[in-house]
Length: 351
Image (cartoon, rainbow, N blue to C red; front, side):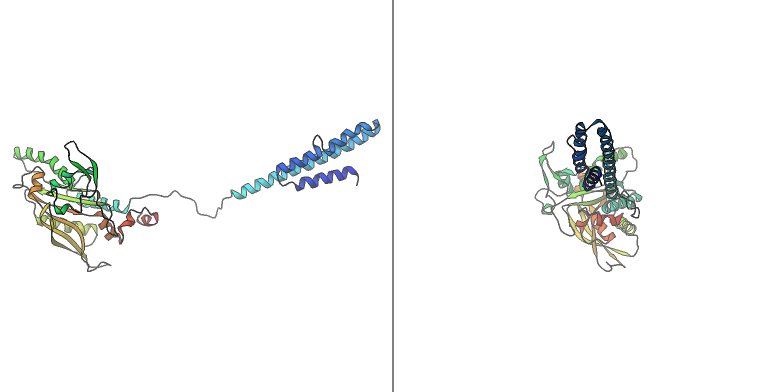
């Protein structure tokens, strides 16, 4: 093996030892660069005779071509290795299931509110909506609950540091009853017009679902919760109608006739007489237990007067229930806070 063959072998060895393109370029410079070994051989031709220069020059050029071929082969090898590594890193496992965009759905409490609206809508009730920041008068005074009344102690808890145009303090509504007042006052003019024309008086029949706020937090209470108030006012609306409405509602809501409804005497400033509404299931895990689900009563004359109506002519009932509580009973949830934690593992069960 002559010196040129050894040079080719040395070049191949250096090229094969290069692990990166940068290392390969450094190896190239040692053989083919301006000061490389092949270049030095070409410079040495000047000292040879014409015949020897021709023969030796041809041998050196052939050696250079062999080294360049080895360089090109190593470059291609490194490029192929880099491509394989990239393909491996970006490989798709075709045996895995496809990635699909998750679909959303209604919150369980929203489902309950829609269900409540649908059932009461079938009984002729309108659905009212209104502001969550209310005046003190709308939240309490109009509902026969004046300042310093002891019944306000658990409700007048969140206030806004401002007043309305009439100088009344604003608060986060503790119930949706203000919407009953707003709705009734808006319809009082229609009643007066119908009365002046000698026509039949249109009844006020409305529910007001929405968010409410009180300082309260445990497994069955939340500072922000939902409530649905209802109102039915007319010239001949009795407690009997109240019982019939509740009986029809709860049997449709829970999709069973095997439940008992109980009206238990209670106190609310805005109704007189007043009653808590309890239910008991005949079957299931809650069998035999009385469960409080609503408050109700005949609308107090003072409240009817604040509606803009004559309490000597108009009578009716009001009620309030918690959609959060009804959702817990319908789906068997034992902690109210789960509805508001935002845990998709819990919420996805209802989709």
